[in-house]
Amino acid sequence: MRPCDNRTMTVLREWVTIGQRVREARLAAKLSQDELGRRIGLDRTMIAKIEAGTRRIDAVELVRLGSCLDVPLDHFLHESPAVLSRRGALVEEEATGAGRSSFRLEAALMAWLRDVRQLHDLGVLVPHPLVTYSGTVTCGAQAREAATWLRERFDYGSTAIPSLMAAGERAGLPIAVIDLPGDGACVVDGEIAVAVVSKVGDPGRRRTTAAHELGHLVLGDEYSSDLGTHASRADREAIIDAFAAEFLLPCAAIRTDAGTAFDRDALVRLAAAYRTSWSLAVRQAARAGALDRDNVPTWLAQTPTRAELLDAAGWVPQPDLEWERVPGAVAHAVMLAYRQHLITAGRAVELMRGQITEVDLPQLASEDDEP
Image (cartoon, rainbow, N blue to C red; front, top):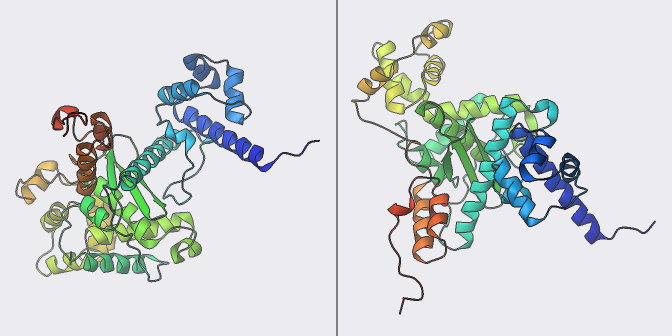
């Protein structure tokens, strides 16, 4: 038998990887091999061979696959970084609704990473250095200490954080808001980190998700940090949830308010001012000692209405992670790249995740017309 050289082995591994990604995308789209084959004009056996990595895919077929499966073309061609806040291959028996949502969320995350890296490579975007906590974190109490540390670093004290988008940007984590179901995900690739947050759900949930993904960055990945080496995945997520809760609504702020009579109206005011979900506010109030832990179920059942929250906030809209889809620095970088003819108008709109349309962009003189 003639031995395979290194080049051949590399190509074989690449086609196997592409095939695996095609399979994951097909399962996420809830299509059988036969259904996918019919949609792109291939026999089911050809789809099976593509997924097994034994048949090459030409450029036209790859474009058809991306369009049919609703994933960016680059998703099939670029290797994903290993450090993710969500991971796991989508296999046949795991192709549940949650699994499909997770896959699509991660595909959007990888596309966002490539977009931020493109702006970086074009020289129009210099992300903030990644902020990581140097202390030991193996429990919820230490995670809350880390959240307090980050608040002090950013000069928030115990006040409400105006923008989670801006907080992520300061920590070196550009966040994109996307129109997909799920919660969020983040990834670190060398000196660049990014996160995505689903627009689906109420604002409090979006802010909690953004703070959670920020916690993944600040507390470290599951391979090298104290958190990763000493805790199970479920324990890690619970610890990061503790970070997110304290970062959004510090116990110190609740204790200050609880100095007077603490009742439901007081907690509604706090939830409105700090723009958190009701469940997070209740659990933080219990942790701060402002209410009896035995009464938590009763308090959780008394969810305030939208009108109550708006009234408590003075009827001032606070649409954090609502209309803004990308951080300000990224939006500015997109405009710089567009004005310098480094990207097209269509690409600028794509990079802005629908926050603008082409009619919002200024008309530019063609490069041929410039003196």
